[in-house]
Image (cartoon, rainbow, N blue to C red):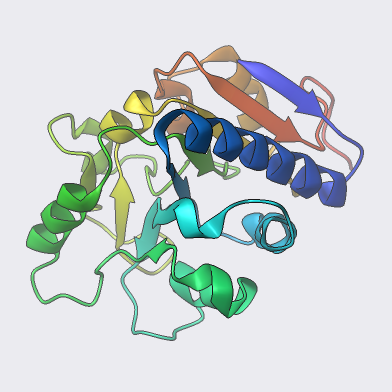
Length: 223
């Protein structure tokens, strides 16, 4: 695991975008396409704005969702809503949205898995103060799913059920990129860096992980 510590959230977003751009260039040179998945939450918004103005070849990019809330189309709770608001129209053709409006969400999750590449070139992940990543949330049965790459949470988390990539998808990816900014995450970050299985993020088994953060690992939380 590689950790890149920067001075602030803006620098973290820029560094994460740089990692994505370089990974995309290599993937397109090697395989002709860049298969990328992005997580929800607020932390990737600035990163995506920077990417939209970068040299990333959007016409050769497929942008999948790592996770999505079960909410109506256009809802501010939907990660897709913020993807569409953040990315200019020229980039939006790359988006492969999770089908969370389906009546049968289990079947919809299986259908989304069928659309995935054999391996993602890069998966962007966030980190919650409770140690969750994607929508692999504490104490939910989704943590034990080993036979599928996309699954539903059984219970609600922060008011909604979720569709999410599972450990099987994360562990198969060629590269993972954590972008960790914001308050209250120092303890979770330390556990992530230690591979602590007491948090969902610490259970990922992938040898190629980069963590970009404005929080110095091991430093105390600000009062």
